[in-house]
Image: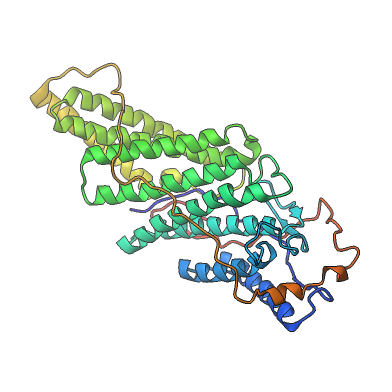
Length: 411
């Protein structure tokens, strides 16, 4: 079963040379700086490289972050700040608010900004894989795992590193709690979509599928509510996606709940459940159109033309017709005026983020290497701030052509 996921653009960043002439006073200190520059450049290249896989990404991130930790961690495990934390200025754009960067002279800002992009990469990798027409079981597992990894990275950044920033996070920008929370919940919901598809493929109990769909709809609704207080100029398109997925999985929940009711000889209630499913599907269809017409950052797509969407429409129609036929021949039950209340709880298949930790300090960082950085030799204008309107070039992300019958493009 193919999937379609909305994706926001990657963050972009200004190049960083790590050239501390006069400050790095030994070959070992200079080598660490060169390794930092090369590993950062390589990691940025991988973000837009279609051949990159999770193993390549992990190797590149482990190398860069283990080197960057030397600008943040104390070598003697004390609570004292590393003397190099504020030596370098870093500039990063926002995924939603255009190409004017935020800048901080703080290695923790670099750690959380690059970490945010790594999490986004895992979601984009999952999206590319999930959009394939004939996705294999192993690929579906990769999609599931990548989304859980992304959720774990976002969660770790929010809980352990963003609070350490000296400069408060700007409202409505990437590192703010509301946006991070929405990304975490969206990753969980999308991973559960893979679980649902697998449960359907293996013909699991309709009650389990209905419960998973209901929980997934609630995840999407919660992610949308988290964004509700933000400027619709930036989050309007994203929210349309969350709304349509909420309606879509409510339609799924009522459809499979109807099958459960029919199996229990409650044909009248089953028909009413399927009618409610039809309503939610029609609402999702309208939201698909609105999503396509809403301007803003994110994927270009026509989700209503996607295979995953059309399949559910046929399933609802066929199941409702079956219930109506059987009620006319066998049950003769009255169809209730009120839709059944969904009080479904899934006991299996719920997704939790994979715990994430940044790698340990690189072995090249020794007390001697750190001591070889002489901060008294820094240029006097070293702390000069960039112009506030200075732009950073966006990353050239590959535009993925839709698979056959998918009707969408996944960025």
